[in-house]
Each structure stands twice: as C-alpha cells, then as structure tokens.
Length: 245
Length: 257
Ligand SMILES: Nc1ncnc2c1ncn2[C@@H]1O[C@H](COP(=O)(O)OP(=O)(O)OP(=O)(O)O)[C@@H](O)[C@H]1O
Ligand SMILES: [Mg+2]
Image (tube, chains in turn red, blue):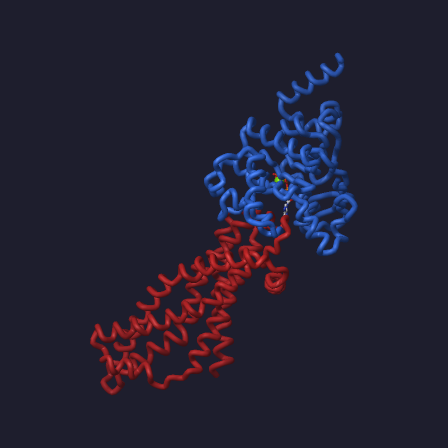
C-alpha cells in the first residue's frame, strides 16, 4: 500500500521536475556544477575499481582454466564479457548508488531540514526543476564513466594476464575479438542510461521528501542507497530478460 | 493587509490549527506568540502556501490565495519576503550571492544594478565586510541579517519572520527587532513575526495574536497585554517573576497617571 503512495509521489516529482523551468542562465551553472560533483569527481574511484576488478577477473579465469585443453584466449574473452555485460554497467552503478546517490540525498536533504527548499519555494522557484533537473542532465553523462570503466577493466585484465604469464599478448587480443557482438555494447549502454536516470531520481526523492532533522539526513541516505540499488538490480533483470533472451 | 479566516489544518489525526481568524495590518509589526509547539510556524507556512490548509480563507489585500491564477500567484510570491527560523541561507553561496539570488532569478536587470541593489540591502541591515563570506563563516546574528537583507531586497509588500531572534543574545535580539520594525515603517510593509521572546512582545508588538494549542486565545496590542486578565495569556507572558514585577510596576504607573 505504502509502496504505491511512494511510487505515485515519485512519478509526480518527475513530472514536476519537467514543469516550470528555471532561468536558463542559472540552470546552466547548476548543470555544470552537478557534472563536476557527480561525474568528474567519480572518475578516480571508478577507474581504480575497474582496473583492479578487471585484473582479478582475468587471474581467476586463468586459474580456473588450467586444463591445457582450454585455450588461453578465453581469459581475454571472459574479461571482456564480464566487464561489458555486468561489472561496468551494473556494479559500477550500484557502487555509484552509494557514492553519488548518498551525495544527492544528503545535499537535498540538508536543504530540506535547513528550510532552504522552503526559502526557494517562497520565492516562487520550481524547486523540483531547480534541484533535480540539473542532476538528471549531469547523469546523462554517466555512460561516459561506464565507458572508462569498461576500457580500464579490460586493460587491467590485459596487464594482469601478461604480468602473471597467464596469456600472451596475441592470445589476450584474440580473446577480446572473439565472437564480438556489437548488440552487447548497445545493451550495456541502454542499461547504463536507465540506471543513470534511477541514480539521479531515487536519491533526489529520498532527499526531497525526507523528514526529521540532521539525524534524518543520515537515515535518508541509507534508505536511498538501499532503494536505488534494489531498483538497479530489478531493472537489470528486466532489461536483460527483454533484450538478451 | 493580510486577512485570514477560519484556518483549519491537521496532520493525520491531530488538529494543529483550530479555526484561526485575524487581520495583519499594513505598516505594522504583527506578532504571533505562543508556546513552543503551539502552531506558529505551521500558521505562517499556511499563510505562505507552503502548507496546504484544510479549510479557511487567506486574503492578501483584495485577492484570495486559493482562488488566484498561476500568474497572480507568481506575482504575489515576489511581493513576499521571508526570514526563516534557522535563516535558511543557501550554504553554497556567499552573502552577496544569497542576497542577489531573488533578483537574478526573477528580474532581467543588468548585473551592476543587481549588485548595487543587493549592497543597499546589505548595508541596510548593517552588515559590513562580509559580502564574500559563506554562511558557515557567519555568526547567528549575522546570518539573520543576511536573511533579512535577502527578504527585503525585492522590496516586498509582506515580510514574514519566524522567530527572528531565537538563539541570539538579548542585545542583538533587540537590534534585530528594531531593524525589522524600522524597515516595516520605512517601506510600509505588512510584517508578521513569530516570537516567544517577551522583549519583542513589549517592544514591537503593535498587534499581537496569542496561540495556545492551535487556537487563538487572545489578540490585542502590547499596551493591552499588560492589562489583560485573560488567564492563558497571563500564564504564558508572565511566567517569570521578573515579568510579573514589570507588569505590576506598569499597571501602577497607569493608575497614577
Ligand atoms: N509537517 C508536519 N507533520 C506533522 N506534524 C507537524 C508538522 N509540522 C509541524 N507539526 C506539528 O505541529 C505542531 C506545531 O508546530 P510548530 O512548528 O508550528 O510550532 P511552533 O509554535 O512554531 O513552535 P516553536 O516555537 O518551537 O518553533 C507541533 O506539535 C508539531 O509537531
Ligand atoms: Mg516555530
């Protein structure tokens, strides 16, 4: 019952976000600031995670195929598939639900408890548009982060394979090119794009409608992380069922 | 002038505002007083339209808040200034940017003119050398001043202040109270102030309404509040020995005159 109430309010929020627009001159600055806070500042952690996870995937694949009958190009192949299909789009998104999501919830939530949202409202600002729209636009650049993640993950796998002596340069590259299906890239980016929208709007919802004082902000961030990651995982299964089967 | 009639508001099962009616007069500092939790903030937010009322009418001059069109309402918004209980400054912006904000948002004036007007407002609240500071670098009293400057920069017809002197020392409180009263007179604004500060009641209570548990129990002026025999009011206003004594002295003086 309560879930429907939340869903209704969530969709109403999205509708209002695209209602009366803030002056472009101000909106533009807000968008640039969000790109900085949400995207640029995440490049470091996304690169770090992807590089090492890519490496670990390669090593684990290598260890599991020590049967001499299995070709070593499988290492490159598995690294590519894992990174492109799952790790980069889905797991980076879940991790970003923690980083970006809690940032969004706590920044909007703080504005709620300190009455800054009320102050904007009194002035006649459409607070949904002012606060949430720039975040949605900034996160449309999220696929860019995911591209970096895919590339660095594969690169990490390559380095690990060569360094560990699990595969030669040409084997790894052969694996990378094996059975390459361009549709997989399309599938990954469709996913990423939908996750980006969830990543912008669910944490905004939890911040905007939060209750309670400073303590509430912390609690809202946690709840927001849980719901955002649940939504991402559910969306992931739906999209996968729809596009890959 | 703001007129409210039979305002009723409840959250869930509890009725927070119980049929409140009154008139807030133009050019005067109108006070809403009452114990913590009596519904002062909720009442102000209802008048501003931040909280939707269940029943009743809210009238700004000749227009009713809930029968206005989009345009008229947007216009009204720009005639309203509000100082929130915790100042509600935008914490990512400097003092000057905070004060500039409403003008930047809603007017198309050139930049120098906007900055100049902001600085007039900042000077008006006696805030010096702080233009480039962030709210986190200001004291409570300074924040209130910035909030007042931001509220008056668009030359509002209506000014709302939610406990403008909570958390301030007595001297700063009086300065802020006087500032609000001066501005009210200077620009002939309808000012509504929430307070539980007795000094404010005595000093700037040109019109006072007293709330208890969401009901209006009394209304009058600061002169009348000395004389009233209304139990609820005297219990609240003269809760301390000091104010009981002040009341006695005041009433004696009146008798002697
Ligand atoms: N959004 C809300 N939902 C539910 N109850 C609320 C809400 N806002 C206020 N209340 C309740 O309404 C009552 C009046 O609150 P209000 O904030 O108006 O008090 P106040 O007179 O301003 O007190 P104070 O002097 O402490 O600021 C309180 O009992 C409060 O719990
Ligand atoms: Mg209050």
